[in-house]
Amino acid sequence: MFILFTSEIRMTILYTGGTFDLFHFGHVRLLKKCKEISDKVVVALNTDSFIMEYKGLRPVIDFESRKEVLLSCRHVDEVVANSHGKDSKPTILKVNPDIIAVGDDWKDRDYHQQMGFSEEWLERHCIQLIYLDYTKDISSTKIRGLINE
Image (cartoon, one colour):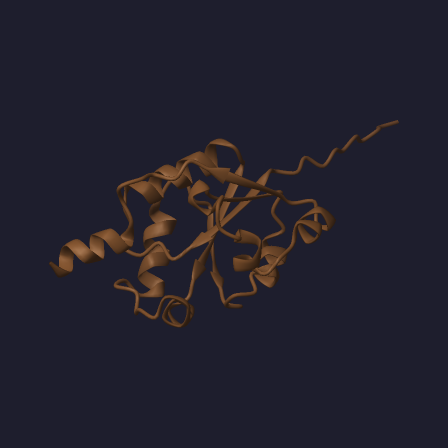
């Protein structure tokens, strides 16, 4: 008689999102921290149209090129389009993460409102929101400004 034991081992899935235009060392540091605390890092990448709507600027690098750069980073396992604009819930539910990670520059701003969810919604879906150290003195906006000077 054979007894087969199986146990489902679920990987820890981490969701982070953003524009990732003009990819720089601040992005790499964030993604590295994400990978250190999870088994799988999924990046929800903002679409070009959402960036235009939200920031009023066209990204320097188009969506497909930003996606290719992210997928070449060893700290990223998957990239999905943030195609629902300001309501990130459909994309989050598609990824089904255990953790949502964001830079701690969002601590004093309303990240819940930005993403379109509440603390109760996170609890209902068993998702933990964490803030990771933000790399100061670098941003795509700052790089864009330096290029334009």
